[in-house]
Amino acid sequence: MPGITLCSDDRGMTETTIALITGANKGIGYEIAAGLGARGLTVGVGARDDQRRDAAVAKLRAAGVDAFGVPLDVTDDESVTAAAKLVEDRFGRLDVLVNNAGITGGMPQEPTRVDPAIIRTVVETNVIGVIRVTNALLPLLRRSSAPRIVNMSSSVGSLTRQSGPGGATTTGPVAMAYPPSKTFLNAVTLQYVKELAGTNILINMACPGFVATDLNGFRGVRTPEQGAATAIRLATLPDNGPTGGFFEDAGDVPW
Image (cartoon, rainbow, N blue to C red; front, side):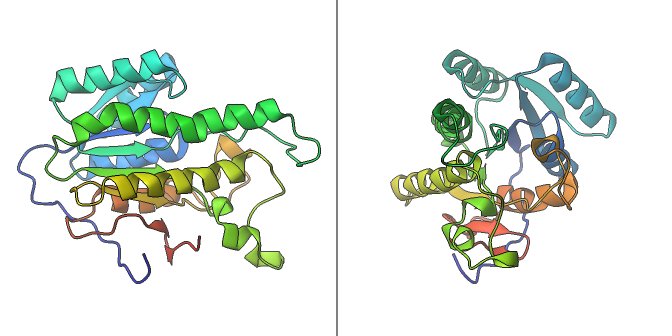
């Protein structure tokens, strides 16, 4: 949605705002949890690795964040169902869902050489995992007075940027799994926006930029904290905020 200014807002809520972030034990996901926690939200650290999840929760708590762990593998139906039940039993609702968990599938991914199984694995996490988690948590989000969903996308999923003439206008390497999975995710997100139009659920996509994380072998030029900024703003939008947008720090990302 062009021309929209992103801004944070307490949304007038008198009770604690509950957030769940998938893939939150490290990197951008962890910094989203830390940033939301610093704003007074109670944050669920969704992660499949028990030790890393527990360590992340302990680190957040040491920093003064009200954090709790959520065992969560976005590719597993039973795990996602159990995660939704954990949140429901503890809080009865969910206010913010950030679908951050994602994988690249490794490289190389040239179209003429890629193993189709790699594409299937990446889509299972980056797209179907988002659908699985969102659908499991939607009943709890509907109980919120100001529900927000943020799907972590990437500018490599922008067809406009992918089809640029070259140089700085073209984003990312030739890769058959990860960039198309983000394009797919953007399209899926818009279908949720269409179905949930007229409700109070705001759904947007965030691009973190080229962040140095283990996802890219720490080749990025931005810090995880910088990469978390747009998602944090979208997770704390006021009631008149945008929905169905694709944003980065500088504003709109072209489709």
